[in-house]
Length: 316
Ligand SMILES: Nc1nc(=O)c2c([nH]1)NC[C@@H]1CN(c3ccc(C(=O)N[C@@H](CCC(=O)O)C(=O)O)cc3)CN21
Ligand SMILES: CC(C)C(=O)C(=O)O
Ligand SMILES: [Mg+2]
Image (cartoon, rainbow, N blue to C red; front, top):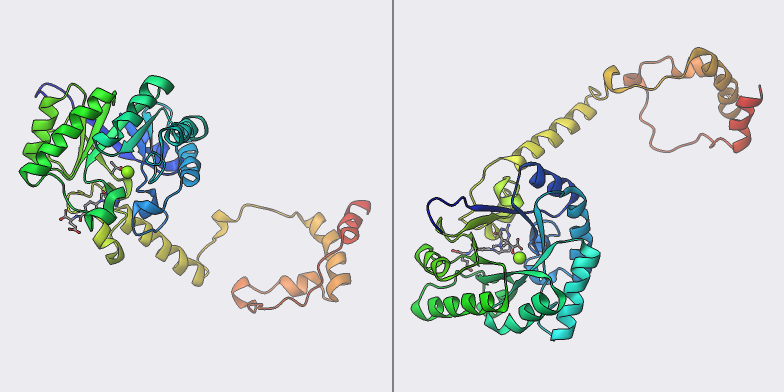
């Protein structure tokens, strides 16, 4: 990528509000990543998310994402079993997931699939090489890729094959910076880096990582060290929930400003006669105490009103 070119900016999203936020922030590309499995569904790896789940979340993101290019990740196993199965699954992502392009993880072995998607279906495909989270089992962890000459050569070979197969862009995940630059230079299509330095044609980060939503110690081993936090949304959400709980426990919420609905005196009086008949209590006497002094009821002894009780109000 040349110095006078402006990098592509991509972010993941998994829900309607996240799609909307990404779009309003003027992202070039929004990716419904299979990282969904880890950051939204709580799985250990991305291998556990299904095509059905991806479709469900893609549709939600699509409702919020009006301008950015929307790309959907093909999940583990959806493109590897056979060409016809891959084409069927890609078709479903476009038709039922409402995405405009798909991303397929894999090296040059997958070039026939990418070629068929682009040539037969006419679907735009983004490739994804380097660290491939769907191959975590074979690699024995989320290991960076291309840290020796053999892997570096393999990466370049994969990149060129995927470009030949018709991929419109390539994600380079966890690749040493100088290798990412070399691969970018060798290609006609843009590269989008994650954990691969500043020399790629663009960058991508996981929404939760950049917004600071993966800060609990529980998340430590799945939040890579290349993820800069551009916000502290997790801390802010925690603060809000703690404050809400405390306001409820102290009866500071809801105050009058958040208690908008009225029952006027005339209707109240008519209700009073039903109340007395059903409970044997005088309505004003029963409710004149301050709410703070009302006993906290744990089991209901009051009868539910019947349809007749409610209808009688409107016959009076
Ligand atoms: N929240 C989140 N952010 C991501 O960027 C992300 C996911 N989840 N899930 C899917 C993949 C997995 N990713 C990861 C996860 C961990 C490392 C990481 O910490 N790697 C260590 C080596 C770990 C090992 O050797 O086992 C490193 O030093 O790079 C890198 C990328 C990137 N992707
Ligand atoms: C990190 C990006 C490239 C991804 O594939 C995902 O979020 O699933
Ligand atoms: Mg992915």
